[in-house]
Length: 241
Image (cartoon, rainbow, N blue to C red; front, top):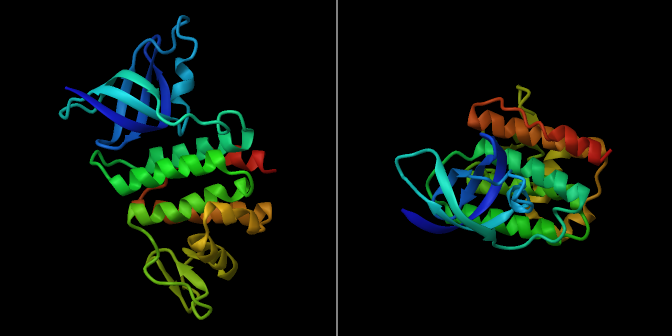
């Protein structure tokens, strides 16, 4: 049946001669995969621009609940993006965020709060004037709440470590390797309380930023019981080098 929805593009790849497979997170069906016919043909000069990571679409789709592959019937920009497609740093961040979501979100059920968070985060990144280099750190930390892995307690001076398996701040250094050290735990706590507009005030060296991203991906891999590599990390490191 035909359904009208809004969607956030996560990833796209070539399909057959002139089509795409588009992986998207939607407001009414959760994660879905869509076939978009003819979008790579020579006659279609602008279609590919609609399927870059984090593009926000309004679409009419053929939805078959018994199929894993749906079809996009009509589409247009839902909220045009004014800086992400043209800013090399924001474009790299969009690629990274899209890949993280593509490899972590699997549910085909609607999650209104998650969709609102994701679409709002895309708008925040597009409008952000300062602090862009910290945005993916902020995003990963706040995403945890919607994935069900937010810290189980609050950070205090007396709890200077974050234990990944328990998901809690702790007063003692864990005996295993899956923890954030005191510096990274303070950063984690600061990002939990931060808004996008405050990111410019969090001063970080490149190595601190890279280590925090690595820790966050380890945390997600642990709780998702997987070891899926995020290839776009290397692109981000080059951009911020």
